[in-house]
Amino acid sequence: MTTFHLLAGLGNPGSRYAQNRHNIGFQTLDELATTYQLDFTRSEHHAATAHGVLGDQRVILAKPQTWMNESGKAIQPLSHFYKIPPERILVIYDDLDIPLGTLRYRRAGSNGGHRGLGSIIQRLGTREIPRLRLGIGRPPGRMDAAAYVLQDFSPQEQPVVWDVLRLAKKLIVAWLTGEAIFQQQGITWQVETDGK
Image 1 (cartoon, helix red, strand yellow):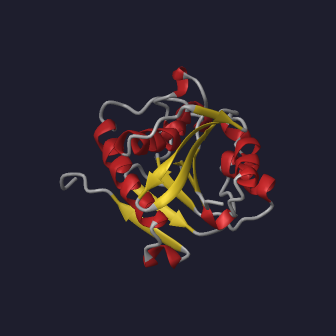
Image 2 (spheres, rainbow, N blue to C red):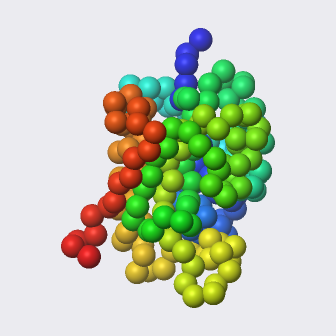
């Protein structure tokens, strides 16, 4: 049987959420799919999926169609059905505690307060799940965090978002092909922002 990697981009389903900060995981998979000419033509185990090859690896791109906080309801049955162990799953999601333009990889750990990742950890029964966290920054002033993550990126933020998505695509392919740097527990990258 062919062994897959599972790329799990987290977000909320529906067009009204498509450009939200909370959906940068979905946005990353959409960019990967466009670059590698993959289509989200399947609906399986509560997820929109695209199957194909990135680098030299067979992959399933999965966008859970549950709400963000129930992402494990899609990722656990997908990983079980395709016999994908946790170390071959990469979860891509937003992180409030990281500034926009910063990306962090960890091989394992807690959910850090992210309920989507928490759902996956709970359903899979392990914290040993690689993840790529894409910083979206903290809300300004006293703005409620829940309202902030459900806002679209501002026009001023959008150029940085595109740079983040480009870098995320490169890092995901590097992870898939087994680059040695990903054997470290944690790594941080910062996008170039024209000297700003």
